[in-house]
Amino acid sequence: MKASTLIRKLINRAGYDVARYQTGQMGRRPLEDVQRFLPAKKELLVFDAGGNTGQSVLEFKQQFPTSTIHSFEPSPTTFQKLKQNIAAKSGVTAWNYALGSKVGKQNFSENSNPDMSSFFKLSEFGWGKEEKQTLVEVMTVDQFCADHQITSIDLLKSDTQGYDLEVFKGAEKMMQENRIGLVYFEVIFSDMYKGLPTFDETFRYLIDRNFLLISIYPSHYQRNLASWTDVLFINKEYYQRVMK
Image (tube, rainbow, N blue to C red):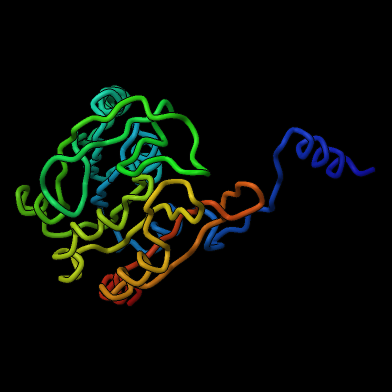
């Protein structure tokens, strides 16, 4: 048996796999795909909806060291961890509220696993347990941009456990005016939460607002069914500018 075959078998037994890395291949690494569509020497402006404890911020800063990031996390407890984890990162501001479709207050279901906290109730494919309901502040992308004189967003990332369509509805003006370049978000296919919008609703919403699909990334599975994945869209005008 070849040494390479033996090593791969050992890795497989440990629960991992090995794939050959191909330079420039799309649809494998979302932030590398984002990089492909950035204007030359562009300093990225990112909105991070669903900041959690800062995982995405750290990834963005590794890929885009000079980026400016606004990270939004509604849970007061998780927000404190977010602030601690990004304290040493320049150009990052954390905000203790959610992004949604309307400005106001709303009950947020905090889960024993913070990654599962959501405005939606857990359903059959969800995990963890609801520990408490917290009344949190909700802001819209449009209002935040108006308040802070932000004229354009390069990347709107949303990982809000099913609430992403509401985030996009709150960015209606910015989207209609072609002032959001890329949208990167998580899609849930399974019955993870009650009342989730379907993928076709979210897809149609973005297509109707001048966005094109770049990629659907490898899916995560539960009970041999596709459960969730990440997708990346780009605004048509943004695409035409950067691809000249």
